[in-house]
Image 1 (spheres, rainbow, N blue to C red):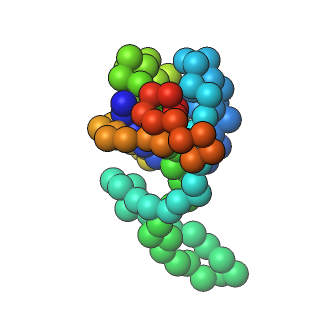
Image 2 (image 1 turned 135 degrees about the vertical axis):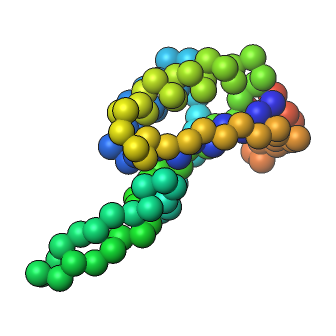
Length: 112
């Protein structure tokens, strides 16, 4: 089992969700986050004053999947989140040691 964590631009969330569903993944967790990478933030103008925005709004998606879905899921997220501009995001793949469905007590793959 793997945990896929993806950081994408907020306006790409619906596209990514659709792509994940097409792969056959039934559930995901979404969090609104802020951060920066190579973009290093940007400058905005508010009431005539210029100020630096260091942390940009992003969306973090987390999906637990079986090993056989990892490559297709990463490809689906990559294609659906792509804009070609800086700040498109990142995808991280982690080993998932254990999963438990609280309601039924099912473990590991059955819990996904």
